[in-house]
Length: 122
Image 1 (cartoon, rainbow, N blue to C red):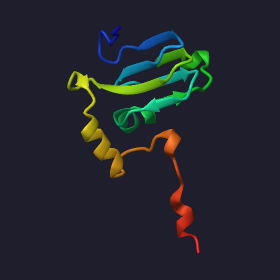
Image 2: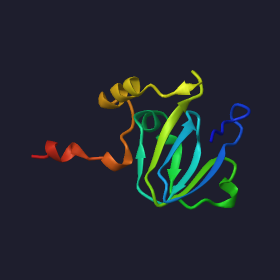
Image 3: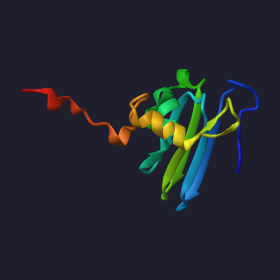
Image 4: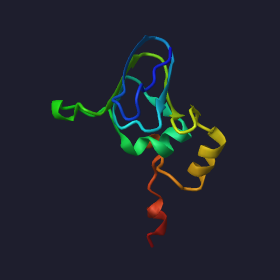
């Protein structure tokens, strides 16, 4: 199944009922809004680099905030979020996004966020 924006910056909404299936979602690189998922999720490097800072994960949505993008995923399987680059019209370049992430050019994934400042304490 494929769904994309019909017009740039129009609202994007997707609801997935997966039962016990694994789900992989390719979200547009300009996604800004709320994501709700029922299981632990995996995030691709492109998603972390370019989308994560604009996302509210599993947070309560209030009616006055309902004008952004939204994704709801209900499954007992694995959930993976990836980025679809709207500028190139293609999937993220895993090599390029991985290098950006390795060299600290972007935000860390929520499951790997470690505060290493304790090593600086005397």
